[in-house]
Image (cartoon, rainbow, N blue to C red; front, side, top):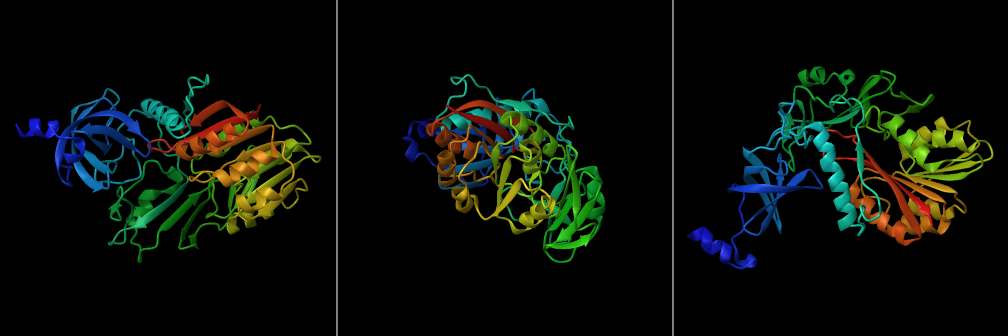
Length: 409
């Protein structure tokens, strides 16, 4: 009878779930951020380690304001897409790094496609289907979604062992291996060592087979410059400079963005948030000696690397500073490529970009929410979005890389 009375109460008068409480719920959808949505007596729960369509017993892990989070305790009616997680640490109350190891890899991509479309509809007010577009999530080798990550930051436990933070926690889950790290990183050897202090261990491997181990910005072993080869061009970079984490991401993204931009000799192209110049290298070759590439970057280490990489390129101009500061100084752009951080470009940058009236804008995004928000401003500024392709460059995790093209109407 108590349950019957509770369900009849107005929503605001129903007792809130409390941390530690267990309830049975049906999972209705995937949410941006690695969670899955369920409802219990009018309350929305964000559940980890679930799959849409499942009935699960969950335990509430946090209640903050109106957001209730929970972990799966028992799967009562499993999805056909549920698999045994290959990693022993990918479990509730375990490592917080991989969100989707319990989901069959092809279905992970279906879920990510749905999340991207949902973010565009909810935040961008854009129905992709009505626009004649659908989100395609392309898999990238390795096909099993393991041993792809070339950059790792390991936390250190109170006992001096490497690990990763648990989800939404400062508690370190010690590990003996990491199955998404490239094998050249040799995580088991790192796990056997005892590390004094609490500074993170930063490990970077290159496409040339080099490995650097650093701590607190100080190199401990390996070369202090890594050599990354992309489509025949060698990039010599600091191990701490930003570089795409997936070992096949540079070739994949450069190839696709160049197809989308259709660069011609003599074009002027802006490479915004250009980093060490991954895209600028291909752009410089495409525009030729009569063209120009404007690379804008604010990170000091990346700028130093880019200065060395493009020292002999008369058609590449490096602008030191934020995109907000430097973009208004550029008078002409036929094409624009931008690859902003997770927070996106933002309204100030988009407005500056629109003033240049480039023929084509290609936007590389690692966050569908900020992409959808920025896409709304770009299309309201006189552009048509005609291509959206996502790449599964972060398999086993909730993250996804999406590339969108806008053309001037």
